Each structure stands twice: as structure tokens, then as C-alpha cells.
Image: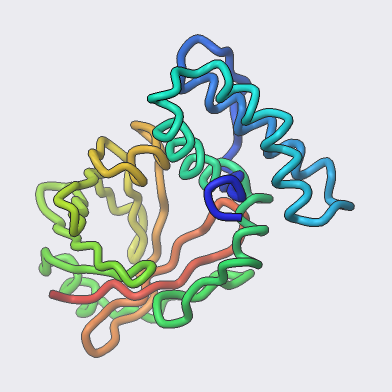
Length: 219
């Protein structure tokens, strides 16, 4: 199922008109997601393949051949964000690496102390791991900036919204996955759960309703 076995991570989807390429891609993704939801009696692989055949392939047939690979990658990453049903399917076939994070049905409560929170706010450089790749995080001037091994970056605005909670608002990225996954102004919410020896446990609500707990390491 790799590139064509992908299909969504759903936040509420707005009604879209096909006024631009990105709007058309959102419309394709919305239709594929709806198909997954409406055909749960079928196996996961059949649902994914039929949704692609019904909505994705006809869209690709209208595109310039040299641009198709980029469009597929862009839809693939965005599909993971915009369709919870697709993420449920992906979680079954590609579960989260327990060394990198854990998924829960209910949120955990923070046990972070004030001193530990102060330490977190004073420190500026962190990193986390995903799919065995390291993402560096620099926190400065109200921004959370991620940098990747290929030299690309992702910028978000960071705001504290509670004692141990913060919000990241996407600004821009030249990283293919990050730029495809998010649109400017989209928001992501996090809780700092605890401080361990050399990392913090962070929790975030995923679009398919589960909570992801992962390690943010101190550099």
C-alpha cells in the first residue's frame, strides 16, 4: 500500500470550490475520505484502492505528466492530515514505534512542576525522532522552528495557552512533507506532561481522536 495506499488525517473539512490546484486537491481528498467512511464493510485495502480509482486517478489524468509525482506526494501527506479514517487504517498497518511515541484513547494529566516548566521555557534547543530521523527544534522570539537533515525547515508561531500547554500555528516550510501537510494559519495543540532525565514527554491530540505521547529531547 505505500504511495497509493494513503488517504487522510481529518480535521473538520470545509466545503471547497475548485478555484485553484490546492482547492482541487482538497476536494479530491475530501471525496476519498468520505468514500472510506461510507464503505467500512469492505476491507481496508479495497476501500483505499477503490477511493483512489474513483477520485484520485481521474484527477491525475488531467495533470501535466511532469507534475504528477509532486502532486501525488502533496496529496499523500495532506491526506494523512485531513482524514481520520485513513489514519486509523495507517495505524493498523504501520503502528507507532514505541521507542518514538505512544497512542492513547484518553489524555494523560501533566505532572510537570513549575520549576520544570521554567527550565523548559529557558532552554532553546531540542530534538525529536520520527521514523528514525532526527528533527531539530529551535525555540526563539515566539517561534518554534524545525530543521531537517536535508537542510529544509518549518516555521510555526508558538503561543502558551495554559500552564503546561502551548499552540503552534503554521507559518511556512520548504520541507516537502511539512509544506504538504499544513496550510498557513492551521493550529496544533500540545501539553507538556513530565520532565525526565534528558527529555520531556509531550502530548498532542491527533486528528483521528487519539492522543500521541512523544519524547522531546534536550540538546
